[in-house]
Each structure stands twice: as structure tokens, then as C-alpha cells.
Length: 470
Image 1 (cartoon, one colour):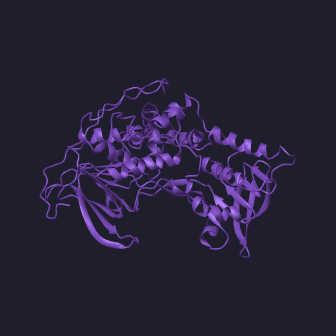
Image 2 (cartoon, rainbow, N blue to C red; image 1 turned 180 degrees about the horizontal axis):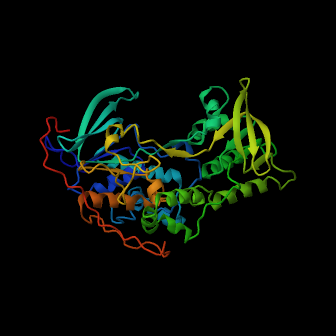
Image 3 (cartoon, helix red, strand yellow; image 1 turned 135 degrees about the vertical axis):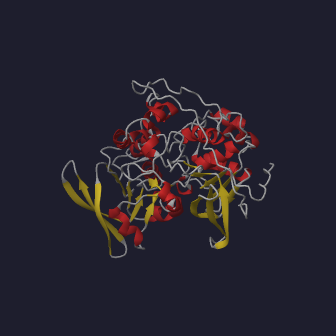
């Protein structure tokens, strides 16, 4: 694999990517063959990892394998999932298996293959600050290179015309449960770390899983399968009014198309906010296969008489939580529909309470005077995934998976990764580097159709040569 030539001293990068999850990895893969785009990506982790604590045996992606890093923008790319299989002599086994939804562990291995092969990806690099230099019309990105222990090894600065933020999400812990996490002792584990603590959880006398989404369902199912029949000692609770299946009808899935994304972006802010809250079942429900597997496992445990010692209760909120001595946890529960309250004592808790977007404020503190915000104080994002900045800034800051409030439910979906990356690169280059379809759904969203805008790159002014060039 050839590495692009190193820029001459005094030449800024065209693009600096901050964070290397699937979305920025998709962008890096599609940018790789573009000789006119000099891009570099920084990630503070030592290697690519995709939710390692949730790679439970048998779990699959909720999107088809075509939703890889590149295929839906460029199926001829060398970085497709099918080419990954080819390099490992696995095409025929995959063909015979007739799989449309691949294992999560397989997707993780595919992404790690791409990350290990692409040039310009720098792991163990923590980005500390981003600033705009008005005298040079350039962004300055300060970063720290970390050693194998995660300690600072060297400081650096990179100059760039454009930035793309892909810093991802972080585990969400509801306020009533924070005291449990902050105090050592009884196991309280977020689902993102489930596999790390799985042995401890399986050995615990009674385990409670909190959260009624896909992760909660998968954790509950894995625990159930490995507990003694009749002595499961499991409790699964969630705030939603039912353990609801994810909307997976063909027309429902058209909410995850560029057509719907354009429609959503053109709506007013209050309407977008209302829709985002109402559409949770499009992306936060449980797959029908997982629901079926849970019911099948519970039913199997009734074949010889009796019921499994597993309690599944939706519509429950945790009001407060505390520790009893050093060995147990007491959860104070409320059921709003019944207007009742109770207490639950347990030996371990798994918090399948989801993830939230990492705040952009820290990384963008140096750009705060230039940011344009909506009425709720959130950054405004244009159709082409650029933060709306003061016109005096000639560069662009793109965001990936930070625009749910402006682009809708498709924002965190892997199926739109390649399309969004291609959109960013088309905008960056100012031309149709990757031809994209003008229509992607049979559904017509709205009476007036927003037309795709021709992407235009910001035009930089004449640059003053930089002393260090980086």
C-alpha cells in the first residue's frame, strides 16, 4: 500500500479528522484514492475498537452488510466488506451462508482490517485544541502523542484548511444511578463493558438489567442462556411502556435514506425536535430476532414444568438507588401507569442505558466565538454536514454523528455512513467526486420536495507561508 507524498514544508493539510470510529474510517477510506485531498486522522485510542464490550457471541448488525464503510457510495472501492472476505478466502463460505446481517465481531474485524491498511491514520494521538488563525486563514490543531501507557510523549500542531469531527458517543448513566457507579464494591457495569465483567456477572446471585433497548435485550439474553434453569435470578426493567420491536418495515426503513435526511433538515427546529423524540422506535427498539430468541429461551425453560425465575417489567423508572452494606444494591422503582412504587434488592446491575453524543464544547472551545447556534444552544449544521460558522472563516468544520438535531434518525445509522462521507468529500473538493443518487426512497416526504443542493467548497484566501508547515 503506497503512502501519499508528505506535504512540502509550509503546506497545510486539506483535511484533519478528529476521532476514528466507523464514520471517520469511512471518510478515510473514500478519501484514500483522491490525490487532490491530503487528509490525516487522529485518534487517542491505541487501535480501532468498535464496542468491544458488546461483541457477544451471535450478535449481529441491525443493518445489511452493504452498509459497510464504502459500498453505498463506491461499490468498486478496495475497502468493501466483500473485498475483506476475498483477502481472507472467505467469499464462498459467506456466499453459502446466505447471510445478509453479519456478526458484529465480523464487522469489527473488517473495520480493523481497513484501519490497519490505510495510511494517514494516527492512533495514540489526543487532540487537545482547535483554533482558527485569522491572520493565516487556517485551522490549528494541537495534539499530544501518547505512549503505550497513555502518557504524553510528544506535542504537535497540524495546520489544515478543513476539519471533520467524528468523536463519537459516550456511555450514558442516568442521574439516579450515578452514586452506584462512583462507589466501588457491588458490580455496577455499563453495557458497553459487559464482556469485560461477564464472568463476575454470571457468578452474581441476582442480576438486574436496566434498559429496554437492543443492548439491554442482548445482555439479558446472554445472561439468561448461561444461568441454571429455575434459578436464573434475573430482573429486566426499562422505562419504555413495552419491550418494543424496532420499526423494520421496508417503508419504515426509508427514514434512513438521503431523501428523508434532506426532508428532515428542511423542517423548522421545533418540528425536528418533536420528531426526534417521537421516532425512538425507528432506532432504539429491539430487533424482532432478539425478542424471538428471548421468548424462545424463556419458553424452553418451561418444558419440564415451572417458570423461569426471570422478571421482565417495562414501564418502570428508577427513582433512586443505593448500596446496602457492601454486598447489595437497593433500587427504588416507580411504575407511573399504576402510580405505584417498590424496592428491588439485587447483587449486580448492568446499565444498558445507551450512549449520548460527546459534547463538542471542549474540542471546539477555541472556535466558540465563530459558532452559530440554534435557539437551544446547539451548533447549527448545514445540509452538507458543516457547522455554520462566521463568514470570516474560509475553512469548514464537518461533523459525523453529531447532527441528530438537524439531520434526523439516520445520523447514527451505519447505513448512511458512506453517503455522508461522499457528501463531505464532494463538498470539500467542490465537484461530484462521488456521484450520488438524486432519489433514494419510494416514499415522498412532504408536499414540497427540498432539492439536493450543489455542494460548494469554501474558497480559501491566499495563504501566508507557515513556519513549521504542520
